[in-house]
Length: 83
Image (cartoon, rainbow, N blue to C red):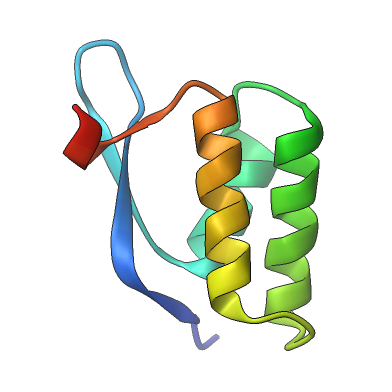
């Protein structure tokens, strides 16, 4: 399978102790949204829909990335540059 890069990796701080997870492809973003996300809210649903649409070439990858970033903030994640 070919993974789709979405530019500069997005590094999320995923634990209170500062552990991080680097998200560098749209497939990784989809996995995190479906399997590892701590909340189910509208932001997560919008991000998942955007990621799936981008994977089907129906939406630009950068739009999906922005939706993912919004969902991450909504879920309480910080990015590594905010830590």
